[in-house]
Length: 518
Image (cartoon, rainbow, N blue to C red; front, side, top):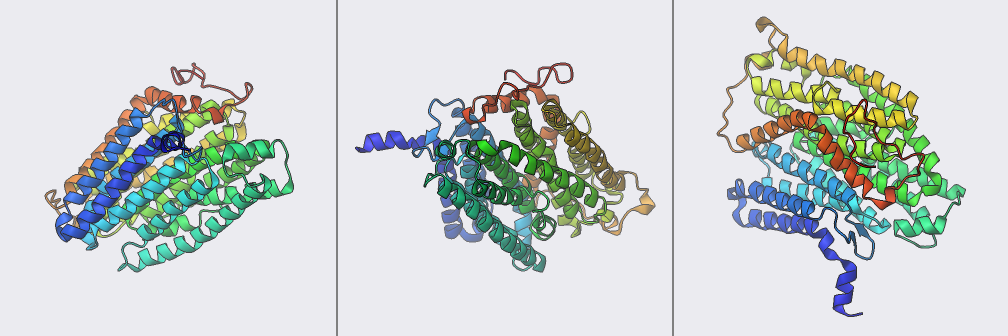
């Protein structure tokens, strides 16, 4: 086999966005080594430029005729393009939110960005991985980088504790996932590509395959922080650097759902009913526990942690529906969740930088001292709660309607009830900021320092917040074009072809123009 034939079979151009991220990562690392502390302004600009270039290349690869690369080990189809784009966007916004936070902590920004880009690289490869070895290496790249970022503030005991808990539980979940994948490898007589595994297994349902499915779902559930595999989430969210929490809540979760769709749909076609049943149980537990426990939280970061658990329950409705509308609503919701959740964390970062606390009670009367943070946090929380006309309302509407059409009546009704519960604890924070009288102002707000936007990283932080708030608002108004984009990515993915009975689209009476073609 000559070189040109091998190069044609590898089709390495599909991973050009990942190549750009690798070059960016190395450039940031070398620049930081050469310039040291003088690279503070240069390394974030290099990183965001590289991520923007990768996003631009992704858009050019849309509807590419040849999406398989590396002998079928990686699939760069439209669905993976959307998920890789979500990971890239979450990394870029996280860098904007991190500059001031890391600088104020006294740690190295260049090393921080390098590890963050490595985590993003793992998430991108995981979003398109079509082969067992690629899946596991990508998953570990994302996980190990996340452990390092969680404990990055090594002088903070809470960060060290969070990293240790995350590492121990994460290592256990990786071992469980690997055992399930190894069973899949053995049952398929040594196949590693997902499509080949499905062909070898056929319609057989041996007990070992069911055990493999359970172990694989356990590993995926840890990554998306679904109950009962959520134990790490509240402690890690509370102790980790806040920008890293923002990335884990969006980028890591999106990569986990991308893995769930590709692995379960492709490799376990004979066990579709079984994994739908398991995810239904996970969704019910996540919706109930996430929303109910969030009511009792006094820390803003822990509240957002349980909110993240509940949001995973909402997204799982689309996965369980198993229809084109269900998968499309998943993709759309993760896309808007990126902005409304990162916007909320941007406000938490701004508040904690000025007050040193994230207690909800300390937000009392904030609107009198900081209208920008109050407005931004209010809009993002209202969107997470599903209040119209913000993006979160349409995201939940698409998910609920797709679930209802797929016959998931009980699950959709439970999601509606828990969504109302979630509005209560989101509104509680907004009420704390807005309704309090001047004499009821908290001590932290009373001593609130005047904002100095000229400090390094503050302008980037404000830009990230404004970007997220605008996107959260506009995405609600432009929900149809974004949903059509998500629907197009699903319709063009051959492995997501569904049976005629299950191929349900969102009907016109409630959601006009929601789906262009299914």
